[in-house]
Image (cartoon, rainbow, N blue to C red; front, side, top):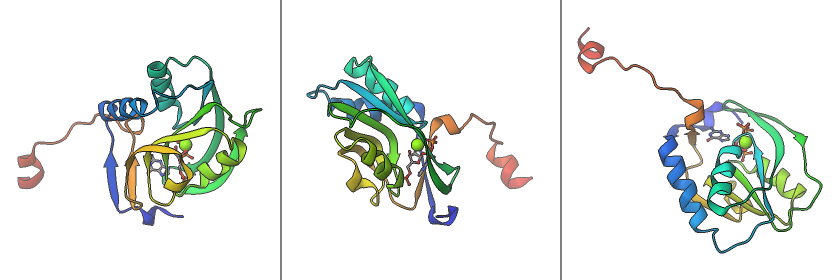
Length: 159
Ligand SMILES: O=P(O)(O)OC[C@H]1O[C@H](OP(=O)(O)OP(=O)(O)O)[C@H](O)[C@@H]1O
Ligand SMILES: Nc1nc2[nH]cnc2c(=O)[nH]1
Ligand SMILES: [Mg+2]
């Protein structure tokens, strides 16, 4: 996989993310969970927001790394859990190729797996997601961005 597979950007603001996670929570409200397993690091923020909405206090992590910015390297599991996920909600920010999801599903086959965003290749691996995003689209999260000064148009164009 290389950066060449991404031709578009989908920029998500903090507000948008918060709205999207709350919408996902509406769809989870009828279920009872023993706890939440967040897939680090991207799953941590949605997991915290979901925990608040669903009043879940027990939160665990699967610590996994597969990307270095837009380049996908080997998949490294740094920490697992000691159960099969039965009764647990498994949370990640997104599913793209599904490589991460496939690995975590092997570890927690009985968990209910949700992501906020899903691309077509990875979509079949999750039980629920909120928004589908094109496969060639890079999702830009608010924690990877900053507020920057933008020059007035006249200065950009006429200078
Ligand atoms: O479906 P895939 O192609 O496997 O990609 C999805 C994974 O990639 C990102 O994590 P990343 O490995 O970049 O680590 P991070 O969560 O620490 O940013 C994202 O948070 C998902 O966990
Ligand atoms: N931020 C971000 N991380 C990813 N990891 C795999 N796909 C993506 C993506 O579209 N955006
Ligand atoms: Mg991740």
